Image 1 (cartoon, rainbow, N blue to C red):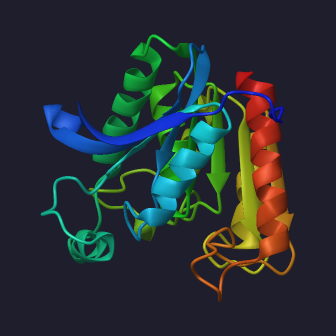
Image 2: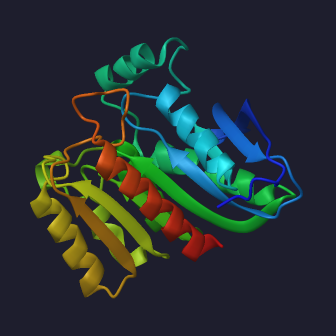
Length: 252
C-alpha cells in the first residue's frame, strides 16, 4: 500500500508490437513513472473485446506498480467500436489458439525487454482471456505466474475441439511452469463448478502450485461493474485483493 507522501504517476498509451506471424498488432500499455524495476502483467481480454474495462484494468495494474500490457487480440479485424469488432470475430469462429498464444507471448517479450522491467512476468485474463492466459503459460513456459478469472473451456470435450482449438488447455497442465490463481463463481456455467473441480484435481495430481477460490452467489463476470446483472461487489473486492496478494508473493 502506498504512503500518502509518495510520488505517484503513470503513462498509458496505445502502442504496436509484432505478434503472430510478424503482424503488427495494437496493445494498450500502462506503466508507472519511476526508475523501477517493476514486475509486469500481460492481460488477455475477454470475448467482448479490447474494451474500456480492459483499459481500466491495465491502468489499475500500473497503479499497483506493474508494467501492464493488454494486446488487442482482434487486431486483424477492421477497426471499430470494441463490441462490433468482437462480433466480427465471433462470426468468424473467434481467433485461433495459436494466434492468441503468439500475440500474448510477444507481449511477454516486450515487457521483459523494457529497461525498467524486473524480468518477472505474470499472465492474467477473464472469461476467454483466463483460458488464454493459462494456455499461453503452458505453451510458452517462460512466465512466473498466471491469474485465471473464470476462464471457460479450460476443460473441453473432444467434440468441442477443432482447427482453432486443437487441444483442451487442461491437457497441457503438465507443462504449466508456474503457480496459478483461479477465481470462480459458484453460479457460473462456463466454467461450471464441476469443471473447476476437474481442473483443480489435475493440478493437484501433477503437483502444481495453485490457489483456487470459488465465490457463492457469483456467476460469470462478477468483476464487471459495467454489467449490473453480473457484478458482485463484495466478491469482486475480495477477488482483487487476492490478485494483489498472489502477484506480490510471486513477482515481488
